[in-house]
Image (cartoon, rainbow, N blue to C red):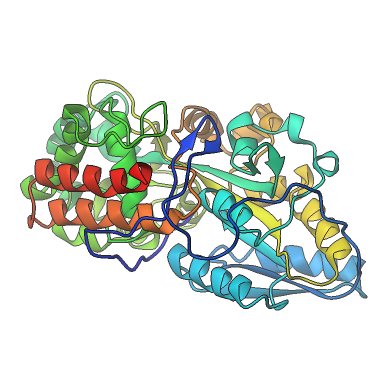
Length: 435
């Protein structure tokens, strides 16, 4: 999953989000269109012919060749690949605009897993027939991201879990036996590495801290990895706590003391990946897609991955990935359903794993000894996904993530203390559940 740029709102966010309780949604705080009731019946998928597939820009170069294979097999049902901007928030906005105008220009949508509930609640996507997909063979947390009110509204195409990339060669030269499991260990290990001549000018650690969806992910991971939570077991906001402050303080303090370079508050996924590959970072938090690309770079053979570190023990990733859905306003829905089945099959997702390091939804692929030998990060990735903490599943996710970005970025840039930022964020999110 690659998350990209967001436009933030003022602190007094007019939340129209609802937080999840056991996968269900509480009363919404307002609406931005649609009935919000979801769809009760499965759509009749009829019509065959050309369709479009709409997703963020393919930085891996693997999507179009896969579509070409489909088009060769289905010359009368060809798929046109529409690539949206690389930033996830811009993708979401364009998809919403298409839905609000009831346009048939978009057929199959590639949705960030946290958008599924929102799009289903507003009836922008159709309920899918579950029997068409081998859900029992997929990782349970991945399948849950594709459901809304018990119904399947998308098919899992890929998952995602954050991992800690680290320079094995430099840790070994510094006499460090393995990757760190806590933030304190990571800082201590980095201090040792930076004494090496080979590490001259290197910084310690970076993630994705620009004011966009990646900041929501990194903030949530820091809070969860310190024993806190963004929302409690009942779906209520719970960020004004000592544990949440410990998490945000790790990010804020690391920027202040130089553990995280100051330029990293402008980093998105690709910025961090390129910094790591060019030898500017000892440690990097990123998604699995970066593994295959790093293997083709100048640091090939000198890096590995581990679980994200936390306050006192290994931390927790945010759950990422993408689901494929059918626009409610599309034509040729029979073709669309067949195309989704093709794209989310075990064979196709295995190809994306091999060619682009995209995390597959199928459990067996993580346990295949032949694949593990070729892709040694698979056991780490599986644990990252199984222990990941979902971001809030909300009807209007944009409002919640904007509030998180606004306050976390204020703390990172020093315009607010961590304590004040969390207090303000708590108030923003409570407005949603109070109405």
